[in-house]
Image (cartoon, rainbow, N blue to C red):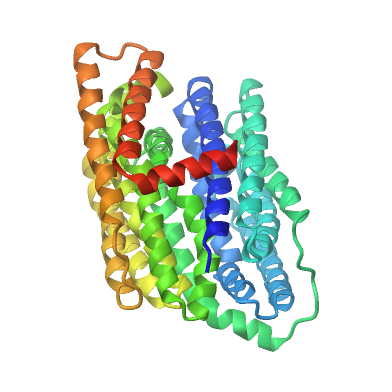
Length: 474
């Protein structure tokens, strides 16, 4: 079997992810200076609440529907069953949110409760459509739609902040971007609503149990630290944690599109019994995930304080120890992202849940113990312990089905090149300390050039892949 479609969709996904990340960084830099940490923190708290509400409106059905559609098992009927049930659940969630209005004093005072309800409905529609497109093998389309949605979200948020709308303007931008993503994906949705029966609902439910548990631990891992910081500290500290976390996400910039492109294809290979294909593709995926993750981590660790100061302002420099830990945590998370996905795709959702669930439990317990003692640095340490747990367990459990071995020469080339980059960046910082954003960016950029030149020189296979991707882009 050929993996060229995976390579093509991964390229599209990487370009879309890079574009989304750059837009997100640019807007956050502006918003941090124009609206302040408190407004950003309130928006991050709203986003965390949204994650839990969307879980309630989609208790694993999206993952189940994607699996059944990817398996080509009456895709239209399974898609229709999923759409009807999810809309019903979303309406029930919004009703419960309205009923709980007197209890959500902070959101109501910030003018965000109504926006939260609208965001649930918009995200439900967008999620249904995206599931149908993605599971049909069009991961590149969904990633491109996400990029367009991010562009609209950023434009609305920046404009709203400039007009003085603060956190409410940020929420409005989120809704606008979500609706845009849904509209773009809708143009490529080949599945249509059709009749479905109890058998299709039962088929979804049998897989949805594990999908729900995986979604639960994913939502916990993504949002528990934000809500705990907001509860134990303040909205300002939430911003001091989530903003460096956004910067640290550079480490998995290439991992996410690779993961998205591989999931439905690994499911198909596993169903056909082609486990050798799975092992080979995962080994290559590891190489290209580390190709970006390692230098991003090195550069961020070496210049953490300067990056936070020049990008977001003096208020954020106190979070530089947290940024270092977050970068390392994201590097470690490459393992759980790739191999946790593979566990589920090869039909072992229980193993994926055990690994991710253990990580989520460690996160919550560590945050409860460390946040009161160390603040946002404690939250970052908790995330590191969580990702380490999930990654180790994912590797151990996946090895029972698929043996994934690192590509020794390419990985060694990445590590040696990263070491050379470290020496160069430290030398530049010693000779002339970064005194401006331009100087800091130049230091990072020069280190990246040295890294890229070294890794291309040391490994012919990476050189061939990068050259091929460059030709595809040009």
